[in-house]
Amino acid sequence: MNYAKPLRSTPSRPRTAASVARREQPRAGINPAEQTSTTDRSVGEKVLFVTSEMRDFVKAGGLGDVSAALPRVLAHEHDVRVLIPGYRAVLQSGRPLRKVGATRRRGELPPCEIYELQTDDGLRVLAVCNQELFDREGSPYVNAKGLGWADNDIRFATFSSVAADIAAGQAGLAWQPELLHLNDWTCALAACYTRWRHQSTPTVLTIHNLAYQGVFPATTTRRIGAPEHATELDFHGQVSYLRGGIVRSDCLITVSESYAQQIVDPVYGCGMDRLLARRRNEGRLVGILNGIDDSWHPQHDEALDTTFSVGEWEQRQCNTSALREEFGLEPIHGPLFIFVSRMVHQKGLDLVYEAAPQIIAAGGQLILIGRGEPMFERMASMLAKRFPGRIAAHIGFKEDVAHRMFAGADFLLMPSRYEPCGLSQMYAQAYGCLPIAHATGGLNDTIEDGVSGLLFQSARVSDLRGCLQRAFRIYAEPLLLEAMRGAAMLERHDWSRSGQQYTRLYRQLCTQKAVA
Image 1 (spheres, rainbow, N blue to C red):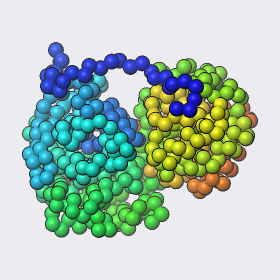
Image 2: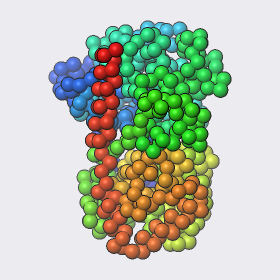
Image 3: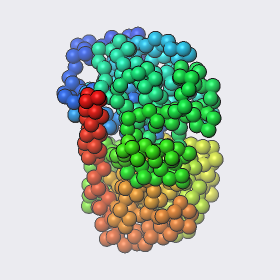
Image 4: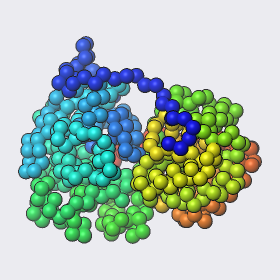
């Protein structure tokens, strides 16, 4: 940690870490089966939303945010259940767990128990529980050294198999979905299992990031119970869970319209561009832009030192001063830039590293926060050591700190080489922080250049530097800066439009199945 004092955390209510056995019983006076929930009010299709992370319990990236927000929006029109692995964070969430089903062993895929719990607002969540596979410390995907868990092939094949069992009514649940909504490679195999087992449940697969494909040795096909000639999994002599889902799903969704167009190009297709182009030509590849939930609003954000609305720029400036103090930066009057992201090659931190001296020389400051690959974490730390009082860096992430950064900074740096959607630019806009971004994927769809942010056309440091010069000129013109801040804060990035698109898609697929 390279600044004056530790990060503050917004106080949260303590939770009891009772044993799983005790939590299987509902709290006194509460029967989960009888509680009124968002899904109880639904009249639409029964949807099982399958995801490997959810911000309510565990979050490694943007998928965790989407998996917390989208099902809640869909629950207004559909009977939705979220299916997640039974991580330790889920079991120790303090919410009552009730066993509702179980699955049997399938070859090397072990048996699992299925527990139901409810969020505070009544969303029903199903947890796939197997202590050996999921009840462990650390990230859902990697160990303490940042390497993928050695048994990820079995872990997420099992998770996918359970989703298919639930869809087939073979897991003992009293509830059976009419549609599976899968997210990324960690559950993409569910589309394969449903077809291999001759099930007809429609499947939707959302690709949040094509670069993560779930690739394992060819011998994995035997271990996961795939048919002998499961060619849909073959990816250059190895097995790709994502490829199997792409081939077998009824519909593919990317998280922005621009990304849906880009991934059929070899530059962005990660070796699957021709397959994706075929799926697009079949009318089975569409883009639906992600949104952000109502918790990202500076008018009622409890993480902020001072809440504010559009036009209340003096109140916003209070957050800028507090942010500088929190990170040990000098109280200067120049623009404050931030980088809030996973520190990986995709996110362009190396471009920020090259451009940072220009920011300092022109009278600006920079805060970097995130974690990722060791090389990029070292870059962030080196900048803070090189420019004390002008650059601060924190290796790690805290949600409330991110809220304060968006509320206090003037510009957000997002020089991503590619960005399927991106959420940080939308968070920043909601707080009057102008994104400076590479015009790619969802960044192109959510930022109007010169109005609600700044865009540059190529992921090169020269292009980023040109955009930084524009940013300093805008900062020097207070009326222009305030006008752009206001335009950014008035952008609508909620889930209403996207939720309607998902509803139409679900109903179309379920109708097609009924007709067939």
